[in-house]
Amino acid sequence: MVVFISLIFIIAGVMGWLFPSLSWHMKHGWAADGNSGPSDNYIRFSRFGAVIVLGWGIYILITGDLGKHSS
Image (tube, rainbow, N blue to C red; front, side):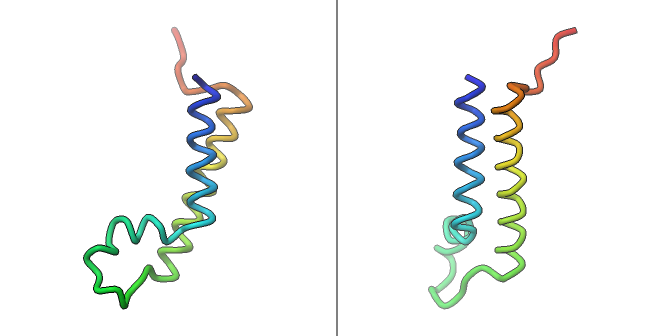
């Protein structure tokens, strides 16, 4: 289960890095009339978030830690 969850995060991180405007088009693109797109800051922050998600996925894959600690 840990490997599956980590792969989901890794795939999401890679997709976010390679296609940062995809989320903008899915969320706002339908409302725009086709002449607009995401700003440079949106692209930058989307890639930053993708790196964090990718790093988290790699961390989970390496350590197997999903944050469940028993007392």
